Image 1 (cartoon, rainbow, N blue to C red):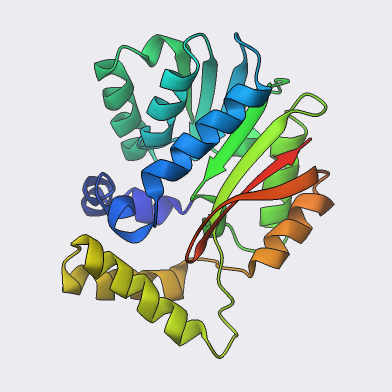
Image 2 (cartoon, rainbow, N blue to C red; image 1 turned 90 degrees about the vertical axis):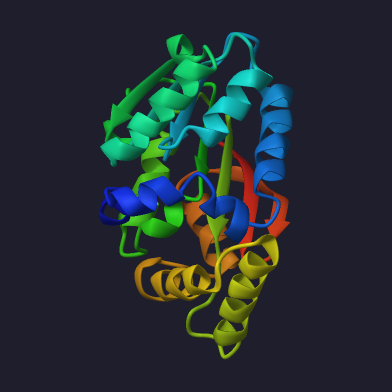
Length: 228
């Protein structure tokens, strides 16, 4: 995750509503993920959550598995503080360990599952993204599920401008202020390391994951289920 963005108090404050404006079927994607984890994770499973700041998906997953335990990592302390507050208010914090850092800072596990939602696109494809996926893979039990939700666009494609126009139009349709959609589109274009979906699928395979299948698609956002 891009620590610079999520150490900004203004952007942290906006995170509560922002994804609901900009990510199609944002909450439904968490529900889908919860159902898939219920299929594969044992009743007392331990799940690694990479990019856990905010705690929004953590809250949904913790409801799905009443005895599941979680270890969440995130580099931005303000986002972790938001997660602590949310989980404490729901009476779930005793099942969650939150660590400031990256996937490489997580305990060795092995974990029964892992998730990484709307986080990997902040990691550049200069070897760092592959290293992050490998860090996750080596912490999973053999065959354990990994759920990845990631923004995917080809910045070099002729249609990139049209894709970004749709990104802004969707957010405006959902109620985001026009000036916010312009600022967000600029941030995505300049600071987010978007790649074509096929590249993320190739990186998953290179990191050692198999049986990769899509489970969610919301315009520019893709979700996959893979296994270690």
